[in-house]
Length: 337
Image 1 (cartoon, one colour):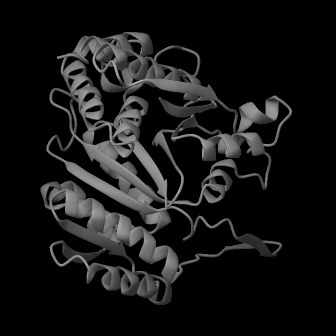
Image 2 (cartoon, rainbow, N blue to C red):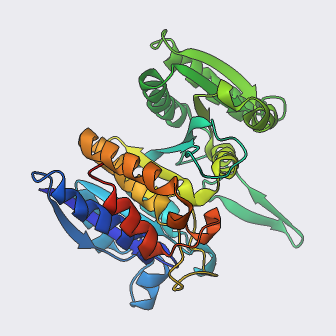
């Protein structure tokens, strides 16, 4: 029995998490020994509306007690000034490596149908460290924090992933402008890379990498980047394969982890029943692979690919007519194929 904590969050989060849960439950018809014990917890605006903190202590403790966590989305923009839910949740779980695999799906119109890349984003420091302050009436400052420990541990996660994929790792930087911070980051990456001689390591400027992702997408396997650079590159890659509705992610630490779609809360379509569940369903597949349930993960990934190949199963963001429920049923119908 796998203990799975569902944290639906805000906006379309509850809709796509419910879809992912339906797919996980349907796996029982294909893998009778695979069973789940689901529980739910609040976070973000949904927690505030319930009179709780944006990151309730009960949610953190439930996440630590679960085998894995599936998170929907958090409306950070709606939270009170000075309140950051996702960053706090991540730090409390000591989850520092954000792995975002992006690939094209047969039949889905996109810019780079052959793209198959994984962006590994350092997720605990960098320019998103949360250190901001005003320096005067008309000025403010944000601090970019890079540490050797933070860089080394995310580099290890990236090299391990590259070793399991096509054994090429691209470390991204802006060394000409950020000599000390990106200098330390690259120094740590190279030190870790010495233990992975089978992985080809290259470094590339962030701007050149952004361009080459479009012009030479087949070149890339695993891209390792600091927090903000990884955020931007992974969204670019998502755009190249059809949008963030196809982009799942894993956020891993040494002890705890959670899995989530890359997309946000999409308040403009929340409650309309047309949210694309694909990213959340693929995040559930990543969760299963982390739990060593590889056959079940492959079944979900194959079902998603088969469903997306037919336009009637695609939601409006992918140019199709399907509702969230339609798309979810199409995936479930193909689990045993």
